[in-house]
Length: 100
Image (cartoon, rainbow, N blue to C red):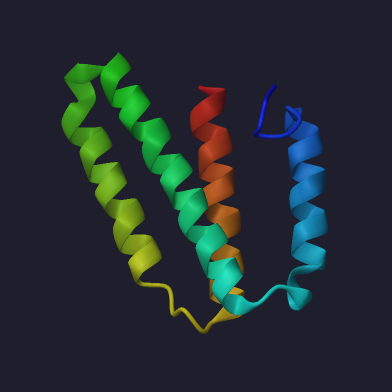
């Protein structure tokens, strides 16, 4: 059995993300912060996979991963709006990287 839940299409994931965004006022800030970090982990993991596929671009992918770490580290853990914006940006980057 798949313990990760159902597989969603791109459209279903976007609709689910919008539902989460609308209900975010009920989610504690610390949980939103964890969600942002998870989104960053997914982007960095995709960059590692791309680096494995394209070792000739290893330095570029390492720099991109470092930029993601710096981006997330710069977000104030108490600034809900910044956390949500960054999470949305990371999700968009993840989608973009996976569309390539």
